[in-house]
Length: 125
Image 1 (tube, rainbow, N blue to C red):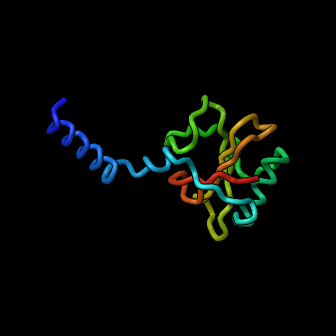
Image 2 (cartoon, helix red, strand yellow; image 1 turned 120 degrees about the vertical axis):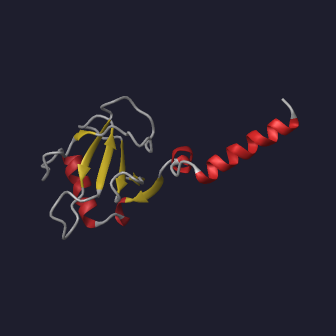
């Protein structure tokens, strides 16, 4: 490969990383970590309901989360399930969720999103 072509390819790659997909860093570095204690109280309550197996206040709690954003580690379909974290003052389900992976009865990893799946933080148990 010529030196000129290599420089051009490097420039294109740098531009794509700089201006392209805003989720590149999240997918390569993995989600940030957050402690249970630093979660909002509603998230801690939801997490306790998840570990207890319910009850859940929303009919969509426990449904399969597809990970279409590809921000969580790749797993087979059905590995992740989502749960609503109530938001005070909001009448709908709001934007806050906890997504857990593994068997529903023995959750192995959970992630918190306060912006409807735009970002995730892994919950350190």
